Amino acid sequence: MSGVQTKTVGPDEAGMRLDRWFRTHFPAVRHGELEKLLRKGQVRVSGGRAKSNRRLETGDEIRIPPLTEQKQNKPPRRFNPEDADAIRKLIIFEDDALIALNKPFGLPVQGGSGATRHIDGMLAALEKDGERPRLVHRLDKDTGGLMLVAKTRKAAQALSEAFKGRDIEKTYWALTAGVPRPAEGTINLPVAKRMVRIGGAGQESPGQQRMVPAEGEDAKTALSHYQTLEEAGVVAFLAMQPVTGRTHQLRVHAAAIGCPIVGDGKYGGAAARLEGVSSKLHLFCRAMRFAHPVTRRTMTLTAPLTGHMRETWNFFSFDGEAVCEWPEDLK
Image (tube, rainbow, N blue to C red):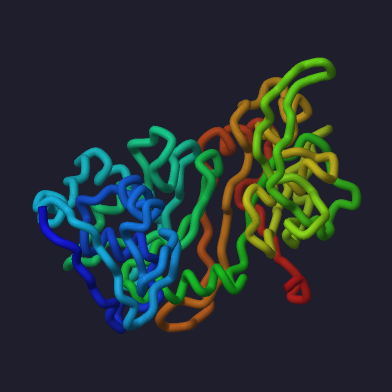
């Protein structure tokens, strides 16, 4: 066993998340192991306890507890050749600073809850000149569509700040059970994570944590814009723009106006099921408009519809190339 180490964060590492920094310096230590070390206070930043998502600053001193030689020197786990081929097929745009992926439905972005195959792990196949592409935002496992990945530390910092500052205009496509009235508008409804009991009258349930419309000190502002692009009987093809980035925001908001997203049993219940249509979640990140992290030029990237949503769009004869323009005053 080696002794305790202290490493100082350099200027080129400022803005990195602690877990990313740890992965760079100690790639053999898994994320779950790091979380355990953090909970026990064995990994500290400038003398204090920290969480894995903490943003580091130049001069921060990171305490690393004793690690085995294997953990210190073992090279990163080799990626599966099949994963390497798969992640490359997902690329729809690439330059020197960023990569845009079209994430499949059902593929998690990061590991956890038994997931062994995920976007974060597959990115190892795209490492070049010692630079491993970095995640800068998330999509839920059951949501498909456009994802941005930074190829350099500088690009990662710029994109992370843009997402945090709401400077990236995102457009999602959704199929809803029900047609919104009015056909377009804004949903301004605070949300909070609460324990919700599931089941009918007289049924005992331990409850589940989920985001719900809420009031009170723990409620967070949540703002979404929507436009109805097409209708087909009792379903609607919506374009949705989340101004804020709360967990499951679009799903909660759609259900709140009486038009749950098809396949969203968690928030829509039985009303989200549609006979003859896939029971999977019909939510897809279609496009993003943002300033390039290096050139600062405005660019728009679009992901082609895939999977079960493409089949559903064909079933209803919806326009798979529909264009949605958001008014400039919706900021």
